[in-house]
Image (cartoon, rainbow, N blue to C red; front, top):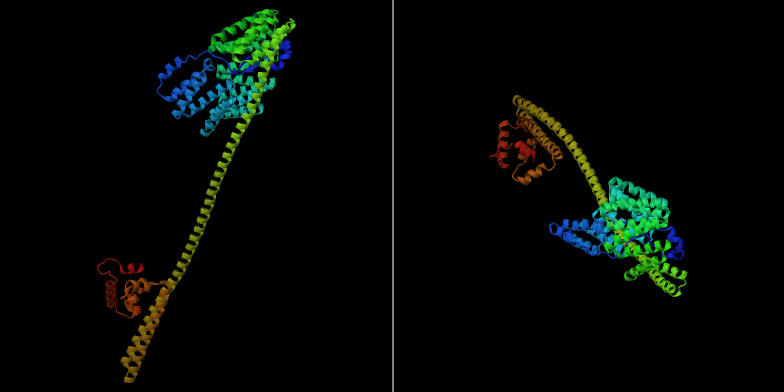
Length: 587
């Protein structure tokens, strides 16, 4: 929540007479504000009834979300308690939200280093777990810290990233918050037109969502812009709208801020009575909250109002009260403001001693403020260095991861390519083997056909020779002389022997070409097989019938059947139903 109150700027002190008449609203972060002791008895009673540690962490964070509890002195202790519970129960979202609460607490306490540490931790954990909404919230907090340090380049960069994530998630509440954050950056750089544009866009979304805290925030933001533009009537109308929401929410702190700012606008328009009345209401609210910083601001505003109304002595009383609060609590802006006007008052009265006292007090406060500004600059530079270093390390780690991923992907792709090549080679080889096999089978088929044709030719030759032999036998029987009979018988025997040898040799050669290793395999398994038995195996391998074998060999059918029986015994098939031709086909 962002609030606006009147505090004179140290760097405009020498121009104060015109300053308080024109008036400014400036943004504060409630640094070092003393708060009333926290009454968390109600929270403890609620927590006692919750068994689930995750629900306990959420209950504490929800308690801190309430406006009246936002600025408790022990808000950090409660947030740390939620963080411990979330860590013990391994509740990631609870851890992230607790870290964001701690970041906001340290931001309000001006400990920007701790605030940034928690914001970055929340961002990194959210990114690791892909919690987009929490990433956007973390970026918003980091941007707010940079805004406070005056680093608008970094702040706007983070605000726009947060807006982009919220838009992708269609998170209307996140979009409204981011638009308000961006508008705040433009306001800080005095680009009032752009600031109003973003504030109004945020307001429109918040009204549709009926998110009262965000609506009130944008009413305050718009009011501060119109206050800077010296359009006090318009500023007051928005402040009264914000006040109505503060009353509705029961937000006494917000009421005090709204009423104080309304009174400041009235003072600038010369409505001193109304301004004093509003300052008194605001003071009563802050006194009830024991908020020392805003009580001191009320005293300063009282002093300015009385002084402007010509009631200088009453003004001095309130400036002195403001100085006392400033000294007790180290509110250097309050001290510088009050001391500056008291110095001017006593200078006008020619009270040199008091004038000198307050000019020295103003100088001391100014030195402290200067040191604070210097420390703020150093903090800004340190934060930039630490943040950029972390971001560099993160980017470097990401680059290493990306390189590893790239190498793994490259290796996988290379492996796939190699596998594809191996598979392709294997397919080509298989195809080649298949083609070779088909070629060999085709050649064997041709040779097998040739063998069959040759076998048929041999059978016909055998039949012709057998027929011729029979005719020679008839001639031998019919011949008269013994010499003639003997000659014919000799011719018949030579013809039969020569023909049998040629046929056997021709058949064996052709058969071996087609059925390579057939004889060798049979002899290796059955070494007792005779030459005639091997020849019979070859005939049977060609699926020749007993009749064909008889014609080819000149043996009688019973002789061939007997030879087949002996062959079955030698092959161990005498007691088996296995077909002899089928058995030989597998050799």
